Structure formats: structure tokens, C-alpha cells
Length: 77
Image 1 (cartoon, rainbow, N blue to C red):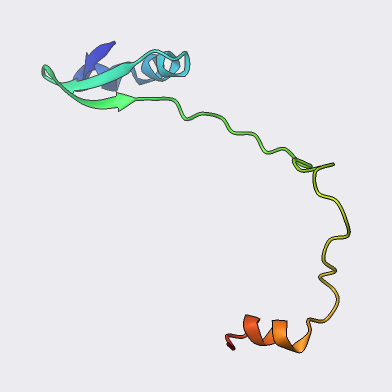
Image 2 (image 1 turned 180 degrees about the vertical axis):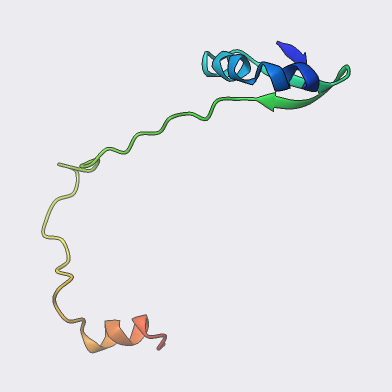
């Protein structure tokens, strides 16, 4: 669907709904297409994504670092 900027101003809600349904919405100045209106895909965050794939004990972040590792973190070589 191609629509002019002037018409898009008055029909923005309808254009957003069309883009959410997957329709291609092009906004044009006169007859020249200048903008494509697209929906932003929804992303989901899944907790436990690596559950069962990572084995063994993880690092203990409450234990002090050894001197060599601490030196690297502090910019030493």
C-alpha cells in the first residue's frame, strides 16, 4: 500500500495496524516513495536458555581472585 504524507497524517492508526498485520506500507511525497513503515518484531527473553547444556560447577563470584587474575583485571600485563 502506498499513501501520501498528507493522507498518512490522518490515517496513522490504520497504517500502523496494516504494518502490524504484515502489509507493506509506503509513505510518499507526491508520487515519490520516501518511507517504509514496518512493525518491530517482538522478542522474547527466556530464562534458563542454557539449562541442561552447561555442566560442572560455575565460578564462585564471591571468592577473592588470585593475584594474577586480579592484576589482569586491573590493567596489568
